[in-house]
Length: 281
Picture 1 (cartoon, rainbow, N blue to C red):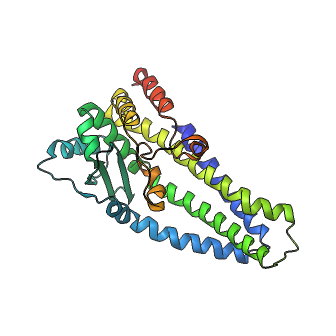
Picture 2 (tube, rainbow, N blue to C red; picture 1 turned 90 degrees about the vertical axis):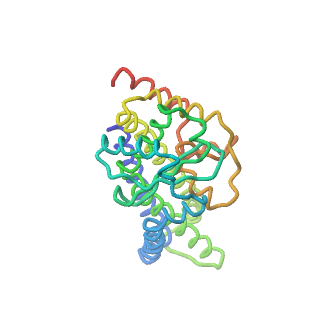
Picture 3 (tube, helix red, strand yellow; picture 1 turned 135 degrees about the horizontal axis):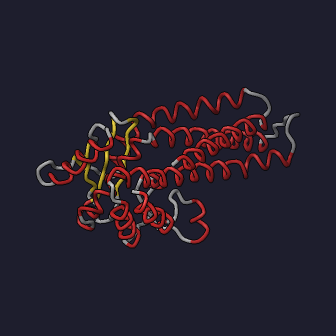
């Protein structure tokens, strides 16, 4: 777990450095300040309201406490072990097996599960999945993802400003042609790759924390295998693609080069790590 936290710090530091370099590329601090403020405002709203937006996007409904009493009891037990307040539970009307956690902090958190995952998994596997999602809440992954998205968005916005500046003949004594092209093309790609690397690192950490909470790494490993082997869908909107990192396994099919921009580690690697944890626990 220490290594995953260390990698997150390194990735965030690298993103911050890229932001400073990109700001310098447009000549001074004015453009940089404007881009950072813009990104902060956008992500401030996302941090406080993204949970409501995402739940509505997927037509989530409160998880019935009578019909799904066993799920509520399972979450209550896991929350006691993890020393967390019980989150709001939601049901997504989808046959695709998946789950995600959202909310800005443990006191304002939600966990959503699909109808498909409740039908597919046995009790041990579902417990592993719920423990994983509670781990995202416990590890403050929503906050970290928001910080990463803020910096990445600012870098992309600076690159866009520089592109339009060059199109309309803008010049800067502190920049050159090669540096401008690198800023416009390479930096947004690098920022996105680092942002996704942070997401993959946090998934590994959530697997580890969740396995410790449930005391059953093989339950989560089995669930990941089942979900991974299940069907995938094509995202119907950019908004859905923007939320793919929230799910326990990417719900959208990706092939070829697009796999390089994955928000999740390879499922085989996650399962292998969980199987090694059996002896540790």
